[in-house]
Length: 568
Ligand code: 9MR
Image (cartoon, rainbow, N blue to C red; front, side, top):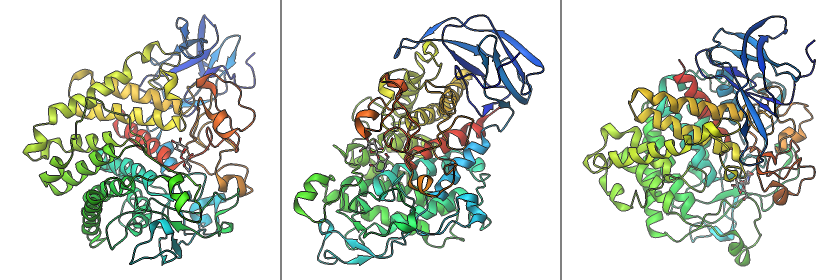
């Protein structure tokens, strides 16, 4: 008779599978023989197969086997049964199977909004009063100018909270906005169908763009109108305790302008100008304001190329000390590339293209908040057919960058214990590794969009393998998205989720996930393992493995939505 509790040894996408796509579960441990697919009540076996040969996890040395039921295509709700071991969590086979994940992850941004209450009509049981009006923000001494001396009060409302904390950081907003604006530019028709039930729904602007506007309007306030430079962040001097937003009422500051924040801002505003151009009737002048903000930011950057943000140095000169997230960077070379690419595509002014070396080497770095070069490549590729001559001549090189990067991601994935692109090497398990998985998926989708060979479908299959990773097919057995799946984070390092008294965390938020160095970084007790792909704990003290963040949610939205848009 079948076991009652699902077996922890069966790892699969806990949401489900597209009828025509690959369907793989991973069985951890040395098992062999048959497996069965059964109806959710386990009464009727609908498919049986044989477990694949042993695979060795290159990180832990542990053995796994695949249960491949791709040949079964009939929609329904099922469990996988491994005789002698037990059954899996129930999952669905159907078209649109990831649509709720895409919408839920986008809705996650609504829950991160600063300066507004979240009424039950939109937020359900996670309704909460407004926090952080941010209408009286102090100019920190590090940001003082003659027009805005230290202590000047500026208004800088709206925006999304960065993560589990309540601060607002331009650098991290940059890649987040870039990723979501790119979803809109890459899949406009599908993006317009995403409905998240937010206050602006029904205003003749897609919900995705309404959500982006909440943060875009905040970002615009972070530019000093006097010189075009952009403050690195808006922040408390130090992190709040685990309290609700409306209880967090300490003074907030904008700190010094930085080159990385200013260039990321320029890139976002240039891209936003393109996207919002079509909405000039609903948002008169916005598109023009964005491009002029971008141009001003670029000019400040040209005049201040050395202005890297150095928090410790800042603290030796100015009070109060600021010890919140640094988003510090060693170089702005990649931010220059991203900003130049966006400004060039938006304005068609070749001087931006010529201003920086867009292809300094043959690398195509995986996007992250500190490494945004490839976002520029995605944009140039997206518009490859309409570039001016100077850009057009580089299109073959551009394609090579993106396609060979995608090919390198795929290489060796089939030998991997979980048959995913994510996790081929221990190096993938950094702080926020879930976003590595999602961004790898995006890179594969970009390659899919660029090539026209008949076998290009494999890029999509491998992108899907990383969504499977995020939703449960991984070494720790969690679906890393709150509220989506059966075994999901219940205790993310997320102040509202901890402080609101509601058992379920705020839904649709992507946990940073497995992080080889987490125990050393956050000193949270109880990590179950020291093996790189197993260092994860669902505890709210684990800010290094179980925080949530906007730059991690954005590529999840992109990946889930893009796969939905492209499903067969
Ligand atoms: O995502 C950031 C990660 O790459 C860094 O290693 C880490 C430590 O500096 O900081 C992460 O970003 C955090 C930010 O500094 C403050 N808000 C929460 C972010 C997610 O943990």
